[in-house]
Image 1 (cartoon, rainbow, N blue to C red):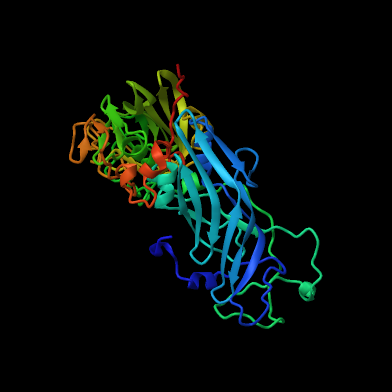
Image 2 (cartoon, rainbow, N blue to C red; image 1 turned 45 degrees about the vertical axis):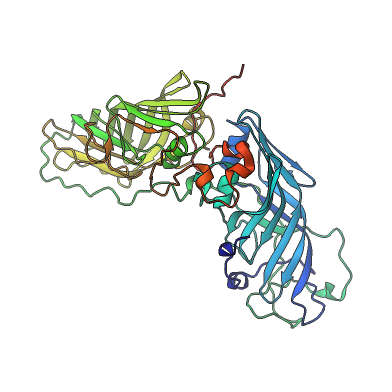
Length: 514
């Protein structure tokens, strides 16, 4: 393991872990390490990655050699964990039996994880990774926020994991929670320590040598196989940095209700998806058309020419926007595995809540008026300023219908890029410059589609080798991620594994092969 990845051993002392009753059988005061055995490690890698493998990739997970997977495409458990506990540093180091094969014939990858290890001192999970006949040993897959109980510990995927899973977009993404517990013994062992009612849980860097030292109750051995809400916690996702402005009624001459004269919608769909299409395994391009524009640096989109109705007394708004955006990638022999177009976007708001709909065309199959996201604004107030209603950072949460329309690779409830909009209530009202206040991605989109500064007016972003400098994104090809496990060593198999967990939301049908 690289030295720079190790966390100070003080962390292990600060979060001294719960060991099973009788596990810490130190035979003498001078013994620094005690043997541990019969532990289990449960970790799902990332829930949305599992959905991608068994969904769009039509692949499978095959646990073997003692490893298991929970029902419903759940988390994985590795068994027969053994190792040591260091009574000086309070570090637990365990290695587990079992292997996990991850394969997709459709997307052409096959890899195996084995010799999974957990080190509380280094605060990381490692595994041996085999692909294309080559094995890389002790690959760091995730950093772990170690806790005393060692249950439901937060994990963060590493740069190396991003390479193994096939996309730079995984680096730094939240993984599934990790649980390490000792398997209860079948029968109690009659020893001198059997009278102890609690398990030793060192809580400081000083070893405890007194048998009468106060200890806490034995830890729960229950293992959580449910995934965390990581698809909405990705650090690379954009977030609203400023609430909707407090509108003043001064200077407003428009009627309290009527028809919208003009307006713009700013939305990036999902920042990590844009990165995946342009810089990830899709190696594709994004094209805005029909008046829609994309901000420079593979940024968010602006949809212009709003029409619809408003009512500032009832705080309701219904606005449709022109323009379309197409995502295309996974080209092979002139055909595309990904060809998704969103058009006719519409926003409905009532008291600060509402929905975002669009027509969705995936590989030539069109679904009209799909409710993609539920919307929640910071304020219910739609009072206009200078005859313009402006909302920034409106939270967009994927609906069940949206998840189905996008192929099921984001679960319902995933947070998409925030939405921003500005609508004019009169012909002479002046719309603000920018992207409608979406706060989603770098650059600023032109509301008029005229190709303003920092805007790609109706243009295309993408092509092999193109790097989109999106907020928090990771640009460049997989082979140049700086990983200790280069894509070349893992073969083309891992290199084409898509980053579903990092925000890949692909509306596509499985392409039939001849």
